[in-house]
Image 1: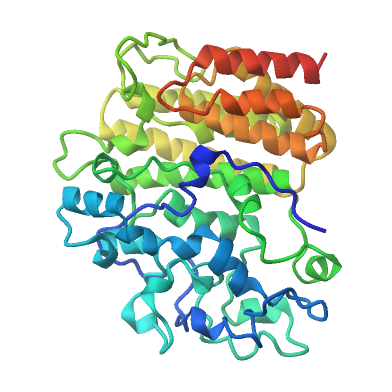
Image 2 (image 1 turned 180 degrees about the vertical axis):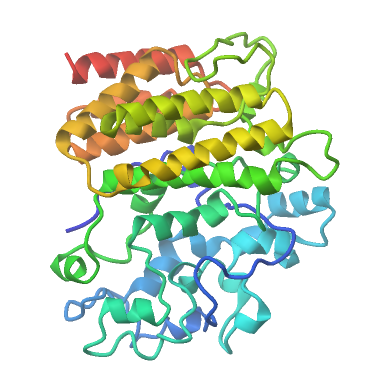
Length: 436
């Protein structure tokens, strides 16, 4: 049984391996302290380097070939040599992109020297152990008969199949951590905007595993909607946590602008489409607006499971926007109140899979808000589209609405030419067709 593949929009696909950056190489706090033995230890033809899947093994055993030929993570280091990366490095005052920890922390498996085994090479980019954890303690045992997946996890393998660990690992580059973060300065030097949604990016990774009976027995299955919810939840949570470490820039005068809606400023001056949405009560025209796309999605999800909790989340999110107009201390306090609320509803949102009625109601809610113009900025509209596509696939209805979904996608084809009215219009047509 294969994982359903979502269509990854072309404007996102090119950014798949472009993560955030750090001032110094970060200890490998996500996937563990063990040594990374290097891609070469996985790549032989008797391990994961076979030319084709092995029908007699529970693993495909051609995973290295899939990664090296099809997975953009394998090209992450090489990108640092192109003209665009060289220009960014010059703009940032770096000797080169391919030698700077600022870039290597997410464009390679940049673990400290003490964690590098004899066959480890930095030029492999984002390799096997960047996701599966350093293999020092399980490399020689994980393939042996009688060794279970639970045994591998105890030995230090990273549980990529579980929503929370997967989200935290992916977001460590595709959003950032305390020690590595794509600042507004880095983006100003030319780095693309970070666009990410866990389930979409997961589903569009070239698959190096098959979810069959053996896989389910060893690792279980997480439904796509639950993985999507986990991605939204941990994106919101990690963003709020980052306020404590990155909300101020080095000079302290201007806040870290990467937390804000890029397109509130980066749009033509004749594009006069400001309006106050339901979550922005208290904001005025011209105010800097925090990027709250994940929070907006989370509020909709919460309403499906716990309306009282969702209403509190909405109230606190409004308070976050109001606080953003005052001072750093007030904004951080508002973020901490939101974090407390998120912690209180984590089990409600993630403890069980979503049934068909919940999925349909959630899709209807997102489409209704889209049609009403509540996702007026590009980033929120982008997340709404990805959500609707995930939910439609989960309902096995993608073929029925393919043409309208193509139009929905097309309304996001250009960030600079994005028209909220067009996006809302397609959303209304989808809503009317799906829920007559």
